[in-house]
Length: 363
Image (cartoon, rainbow, N blue to C red):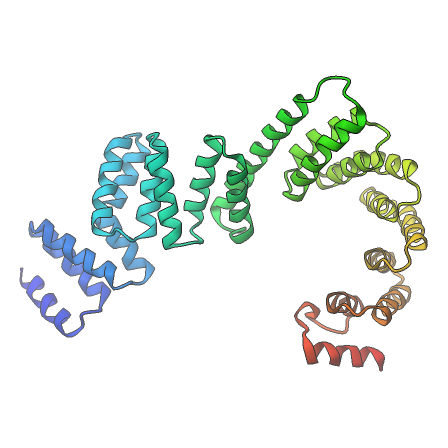
């Protein structure tokens, strides 16, 4: 009681001290004044305290207890506990997101969606709320919204603990969709129809790095349309990304046999050769691609990098120099300067700094 009096007096002089208010709330609760303790925790939260005191206050209000109940499968009791915390902290995104998770678990999907959206309105980059809402959308058949949610987690929070879960769930969703789309086409369907129907879906899965789904689709297209250069190329690309270099080479070779004058496919073949350590053949393919499209910067860069990798430093420098002479693109110039070793961090070069590096190159 004496400590309570002292803390109350100190807080009159330092009303924004979160630690003092936290301890005062705890003392009041221990003295049997539960309402007074909750009121102090509520005042503390209104001060926008540092994360440590915010989380400790929320746990004292009942959030920790709610998590324990949820872990034991007591969803109804956990919901009731979180709702009590929400009454004290109605604008805390963690509380609202936890409430949404429990509503979702209880099958109250409409309420859960509203709560997730409320949490995201309070904290737009909240990873847990984004992931929870994506899961809800996936479970209720709103696949496009679910995919967008998973991708937002991966794009904005790639190193968050939830990112691996988002990747796993996105890949599973994309694979289910791929299996459904391939099964929808009748056996013996016209190859052109199969290619037209499925290639865009395969490209979408590839772009999302959902390689199991992309493999499912491109394999189906190649079986139906074995003479499609694009289908063979994209299956080869997908196998390369799936760490299947030997399989990648088989289909990249087939793609270039079907379309021998396509520089993009030849560049893909070069990448497949490099994947199985056939660098001499890779260089030959890149030279063929460059002969077909001499202005293609990506082919020039890959050739310069390959020449450098085999130890021909002078040859690589000449190639990077030629790129610098012909490009007006700052990004390409920075990449070439990196190859020439003229800057430690060429990606950060802008404006005058980039011009200075170019001057050094000219000299």
